[in-house]
Amino acid sequence: MQQPAESSRLVIYAALAGNFLVALTKLWAAAWTGSSAMLSESIHSLVDMGNELLLLYGLQRANRRPDHDHPLGYGREVYFWSFVVAVLIVTFGAGLSIYEGIRHILDPEPMENVVANYLVLLAAAIFEGCSWLLTLHKFKGRKRLAELPDEVLRSKDPPTFIVLLEDTAALLGIAAAFAGIWLSQHFNEPIWDGVASIVIGVILAATAAVLGQETKGLLIGERAQQEVLDSILAEATSLDGVAGANGVLTVHLAPHQILAALSVEFEDKLTTPQIEALVIEMETHLHALHPEIVALFIKPQTAGRFHDVLHKQRNEDPGTT
Image 1 (cartoon, helix red, strand yellow):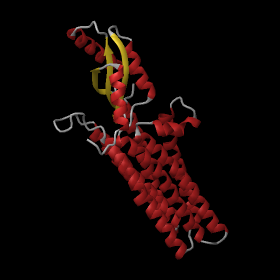
Image 2 (image 1 turned 180 degrees about the vertical axis):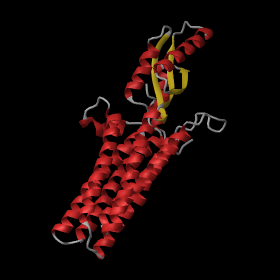
Image 3 (image 1 turned 60 degrees about the vertical axis):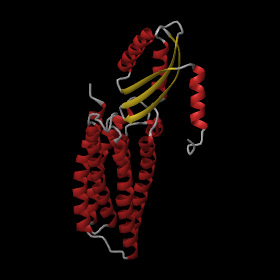
Image 4 (image 1 turned 90 degrees about the horizontal axis):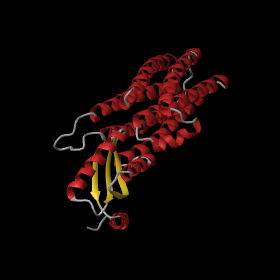
């Protein structure tokens, strides 16, 4: 069975190969025809290539083993570099596309060899479409298409949904470039080519806004999905000697790495050695059930005490000590 990280790498490699071919053809077409929209599209593809290299770098860095200074490992490198990618899309992709569009509107130049642009856009649509379908298949799984927006918000694996949104933005950008080139040719008005370039920049800025919001949340620290929390509590409660599982606090360190702190109330009749043995049994069961749990802390605690502490943490002014 393919490992989750390997699946993410496969998606990125496919997108990187597609963007490399697309960038070459778009740059050639932009140089030959003088199309502003095509130049923006080539910038778009080059930025995407840089982003995918950064995502691969983040995945490689995240695999480093824990050490003295980072006892929980380097998993959050994935989230950091994913956030950097979102920032780069705005600063380079969107910024340069909008700038190029404004420049072309202020100083319009007629396009030459328009047929070449159409052929390049068709080739780009094929390359990007293949990458999009592969990424969609990996990300979608058995979910319906209507569930995908919510799944992006729930996902803890930014490399995969970043590539999916990048490819979606690329296909929308190709459509905008086609429309701009066609309108420029049909009305003999090159300004439309510049308008298309600005539209491409806006598409990239909107994509970056979504990615920035989602990756920021993961970088700060998001809890595991509810089904994971329910499973942990149900497994802990099922063991003999456990009076109740009060709650579990989790945070994702990486897409497939979770830190969990579990509050458990043990039966009063248990001795200290019995509690220690039960804790070991609980750890063994939970690690087998959820191998993504890389650090598990179990705290003996009454339900009342757990809820009192939780209430205090959530209502206390962060500025107080």
